Each structure stands twice: as structure tokens, then as C-alpha cells.
Image (cartoon, rainbow, N blue to C red; front, side, top):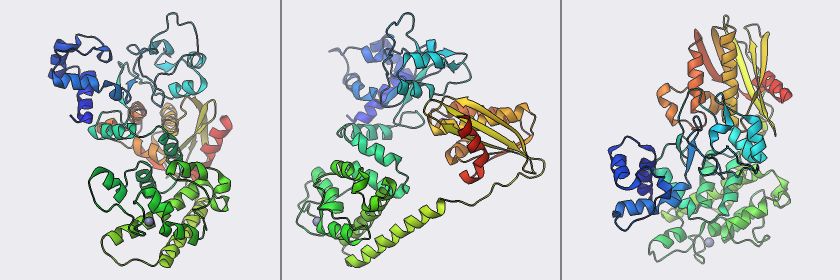
Length: 466
Ligand SMILES: [Zn+2]
């Protein structure tokens, strides 16, 4: 039976207390024991057996959503989103402390205690968890989906990546952090996750007779052959303005490829890694396009033309990079009768600090406020900064306020309707609710994105406060 669907049932057992199915299962099998501790019995139905069998894999995707922390154990429950959901306390004595609620005072993290109990990086991740303002019970999060709600699609995705080797982790992290165009990132992702439908890949799934490369017909068409090893790929890598000799490093897969190019001296013109990954994506894309048009019986494009095209895209990439470096847009004062609130957050190694700067229509600074934040993730951090600004604005009776932030994601999240909050990332849902509550204090308000260059004052104050 499809594993992802079994996970859906497991999720229902865990979360849907009121459903009829859950009640049936509870009466028959669970009897208020912990679902994860249930033993298999001979008398179990096939479906129930299959659900119990999927638990190990299912468990890797779940984590507690912390409300008041009273139903989550720091020893037995996964509760910190991230690679390690059950961080080991580094304090020996465990007397009396077993629940997450022991680390919460007045709906806030007890920062000193968290830092005392957990290693630095774990403490950072714990403090990054947003706690709700209202009294809420703990529940469950489904980590493969950003909004924390289970979906069959994300379960399939998780299952297919679980089957890959653990080494792919590193590749992911490198690529994830790269600031390259999303389309190229997607192509990269398909290559690294081995989901690009090359003939080699298709041949591993279905019996097809010809698995060989369309360009050279001498080797099986894998993504590594196609984009790196094939004679056509070699000519392109060497022929373009980068002049990369693909025969120099002795590498035979993407893993080794990443390891080779992560070293800056191995990259053409010692360029930065982002540029290199972006440029490599351009080469891949061009080869993939040409390969597909050959597959559909079209005339081949001469190598020289392909190389020229690639070079012009490299050039474009450089130009875009240069033009975004010194952006010369200036901050504009708000209309008469309005107050502008610019906010920003600076995330340091040990703490984050935020700032909100209020200005009137003449551009004069009315007030500046700074505050501390526990977030190590930029998005909840940026949103907290805007909320602090909104709370301050409400306190001082500003009625018409334009909030400006240089985080596009924060701005679009805060523009959500109440009904769409559930779709946002789980760690910002409570914050967005809070902003909507606060915004009722204003006569009229607007929230807009502003380039970093226009957010200079808030940015500097936040940096300085850190
Ligand atoms: Zn080939």
C-alpha cells in the first residue's frame, strides 16, 4: 500500500481527536497509550499493521508544536524543528525538569534556563521557536510542509529523499543557500535529487532499449555524463569564457563535483560560489534544452552558437550583479498626516537586535526604538521587528502608519488575510495573528517593501544595537 497514504492515516491518529475513525481506532487498538509505543498484535487488521509499520519513517517528519509546553517532554518527544528534533540537555541533574513548560515563563522562553540546559546551537534553535500569545495546548507539526500541516505530496517527497544517501545533505545545504535564480535552482535540484528524466534514469525504471547519450551515443545518459563528462559538455565548459577543463579533476559524480568546486581556487577566476553555481546552471540549462530538441528530431544548434549564448548569459549575470550592488534609490517621506515606520533586525552570533524608526512627512525622525529578539531565523525576526514597531506606534497614538521593511517575505506574510494564516510557515503564524490584532489600533495602515538602501537608518540602528 502507498506509504504516503499510510502516513496520512498515522497523522489522523495523532491529530484528529474528534474524528470517528480515531475514536474507533482508539477503542480498538490505542486505549490512550502512546501511538509510538504500541506493539503489533497478530489480531491487528492489515491496515492497522501497515500503519504501525510506517511509524519509523513517519516519525522523521513530525515535531511538537509548542503551545504551553505542558504536554511535551524534553526527553521523549521530538520538539525542536530542524535536523535534530530531540536535542540532548547538557545538564546532568534532571530533577523536576521534564516538560517543555518548565522552560517557559509568562508565555516567553526562559532564556537563561534554555541557555544553561542546552548546547549553544540547540539553545539558538529552541529560542527561535515562536510561542503563542494566547493559552494554547501543544499539538503536532508536520515538518516537510512549511505550514506544518500534513500533505500526501510532501510525504512522498520525504520518502523519496529518505531513500537517498545521507551525503546528499551537504549538497542540499550548499545549493539552498546559493542566491541564484529560482529556475536554475530548480534545475539544480532536479539534478542533485536525481529526478531529471535522463534516458539513464528512465531506463532504471522502465525497460527501454536505448539508454545512450544523444550527443555521443557512447555512454549511458546520466545527468553527470550529460552535463560534465560527455564530449559536448567538455567542449562547452572549455569553449565558454570560463575555459574549464572537465578532465582536470578526477571526479565521477555530483558529490565529488561539489567537493571540488567548493574550494575557491578550483573555480574559474576564483569567482564566488554563488556566481559559479548560477553559471553552471546556465550551462546545464543550455545543454538540457539542446538535448531535448535533438530528442524531438530538431536540427542541432552549432556548438559555437551555444557557447556564444552561454557567454552572453554569463555577461548578463555579471551586469545584474553589478547593478544591484550600489542601488541608488532614496527613502521617500510618507504623505502628509502619515507616519512611516521602518524596521529591521540584525542577527548576531549570540543575540538578535531590532530597531524601528518613526519619521513624519518632513523626514524628521520622531523616535527610534530598539529591542532584543530571540530569533536566529531572519523571517520571524523581521516580522518581530515590524510588530515591535506596530506596538510602539499604537502606544504613541499614531493613527496612519506606513510600515516599511526590506524583507519581501515578511511583507507578504503580514498582508495575509486571517483565513490564510494557516498556509504560512508554522513559526510565523502566531506573529501574523498578533500583527493583525495590533493593526486594529490604527485608523489606516499600509505595509510595503522597501529596498535595503532605503531602510538604511533602521538597518544601522539594528546593527549598532547588536
Ligand atoms: Zn555523451
